[in-house]
Length: 151
Image (cartoon, rainbow, N blue to C red; front, side):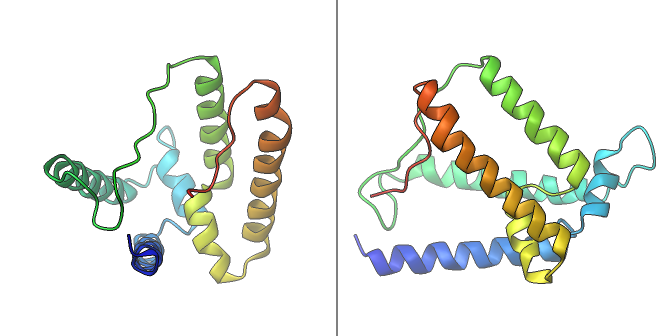
């Protein structure tokens, strides 16, 4: 396994993802809120972005099913199946409400830091504080493992 190839591939993938977010308008919280406001002045243009994302993921799933091993690893590391429970539904609701109010979610927020806007920086700081609180306090009490870095 070539660690440098893994890092370069991850860096290139992240850069392409960030460029795609920028070109698609996903870094503009006003545009995202317009897309999420289906009962009011709805902006359907981001539906094409979501459709493109689904196409990319589906092609990745198709390729993954054909391959026995990844290009830069010994095996694919897939998450375990988790039941749909109260914690999952609550977390999804909190994510959705935050996305609707702020017009940002984690990926676009990190990419939007490049714009140098104070509200985006505040959002990212609040997001990191919330993740830290979860990892240090909540995950420990519920015996839920916090996200860990790959070895």
